[in-house]
Image (cartoon, rainbow, N blue to C red):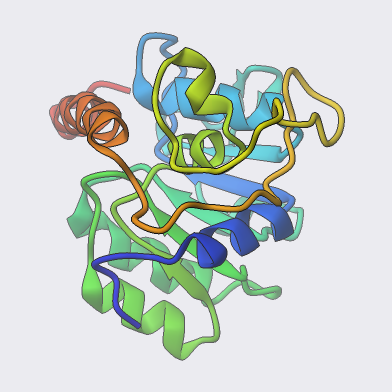
Length: 207
């Protein structure tokens, strides 16, 4: 498929379907974008599994950290890759060896690896690259518009809370043609820059 852009229906379908997300590369440091994204998704009701070999056996926000995907005892619906692009292929190679193959491989903002995407798709997985599930969830639920960003999601009503968590909202909302606006682009650019710094720090040895 074309990974330069994604239909809202495709992203919405993923976020509405997955329940358990393993985030590879999440940091325990509360000033890192990966920590923010992990916390946000956890608070929206997703079961979040942190994967970070440098933190294995510890906890992040009360969730046990595993060294690698193969160590996770639970079935994983989605693998969220918070590592630099060159690390995506080995992560996907590990994911395809799991007894229960994840249904989605999601690569965070600034992360794109077409070889990894092809491997995932050849094994029946859906793939998203260079996107942040935190931003996409906020945009599609209209939550992001509460902070002054036009989400291009059309509604005259406040987003409904769909379940437990701080603010689990319904993603079943009509979307205006045209996708993201300049405001959402700026929000994504800001987070992408922060994530790039985090990944660069990680390569130098920071957790």
